[in-house]
Image 1: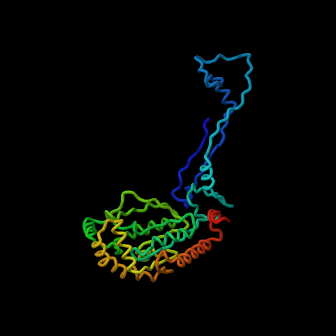
Image 2: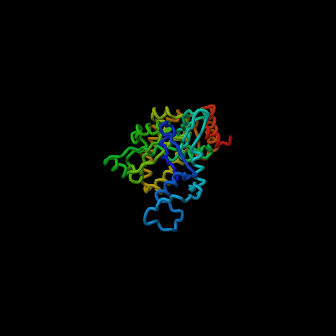
Image 3: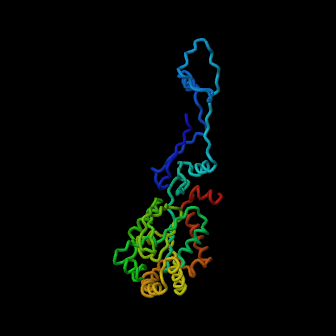
Length: 335
């Protein structure tokens, strides 16, 4: 009788009732006495593993007395990391048991799903949005944060648009360059705690990669991009809106270094694109959206005071969202 270890695939989302699964681990498995007796009667039981099997079935003994045998014991070992993972993937409350299979548990102690807190970060190209997002994540000290970039949702270019992009005449900063329908759907699914497949955009070839990036919902979702506040449907999903305000000269210097070093562009092409397309789009679409911002962060990631204020507000909102935010949150904070 072999040890039984029932494995289970991690659920696509901890928010789904159908994803609840169970793990059964038997550390010790004993062979029953009657099984041994049947094996002895059939002649297939060999006490000495080195002795050869009999050529013919053993004749039935009429007067012999069978000597007592101890039960054979078989054991299976499980590493400490496996035990720890199995333990951490199960959360118990007074009313229900939640099997997360290692996925972040987006539930409070009453077994109710807690809606994530969504932060939208907007700003001009090379203003430091990603740096601000990284600083927020680092200071939040929350184990489950999803960072979603608007750069992943550029539309697939047709042949004519490819030709324009090759000579730096395609406007990647215009709202028409983005697939807002796909973006809104992905953000909504993340907010519901579901698994999503996010496109990967290649800025060298101006096309989407064949592979995608798998993401899951979390307690905090950060969405950053140049037109984060442009689409009304996306704007409604944001619980906190941050605008990163960086001087135009600084943004241009950063863009020159990035596009030349990382994207294989030449100096003349970057300057042409910036003057003819990037800066006009900022003035017409991005800067006016600052009116939607709850917090404006000058100097980007260098502004530690602003980041501390954002982190403090997020912590406050997470605790206000529920009187008992979640077992995992409490354990993480050492309660």
